[in-house]
Length: 154
Image 1 (cartoon, rainbow, N blue to C red):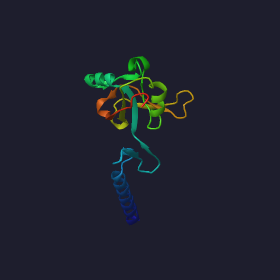
Image 2 (image 1 turned 90 degrees about the vertical axis):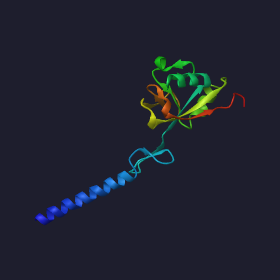
Image 3 (image 1 turned 60 degrees about the vertical axis):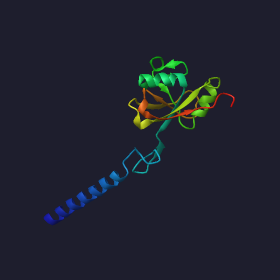
Image 4 (image 1 turned 180 degrees about the vertical axis):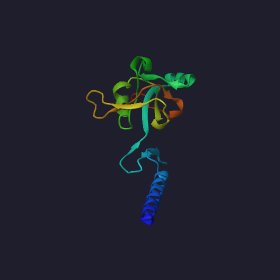
């Protein structure tokens, strides 16, 4: 009887060790080399990058301040309560709808995993998909790329 109990405990310990080893090889919800988040249980994978459109002067001011607090065109985080962002699929439509007449625009590539402020995906009106909103300032360290956008009409 004692041998059966010890054998069962040994099998349980080995099984737990193998599970820990598998999880250590590919942690749950950690970005892989291609910056895509991977769930070790293979339930979901999603891009950790969100985007924010701003003008060059505002971005320069944000760099001097050490954080970005513009919510959207002409509106600050303190006024709106969050910073409007977009997914890779959404930002071109936002650019066309709200910034078509603005020059000197930049697209901030923001790594969600580097933000200290929470990101909440929220449905806006009749939009086909929820938009990411950052509820607090955007840390400069979370901005992994700054891409100049083409001038209107180009």
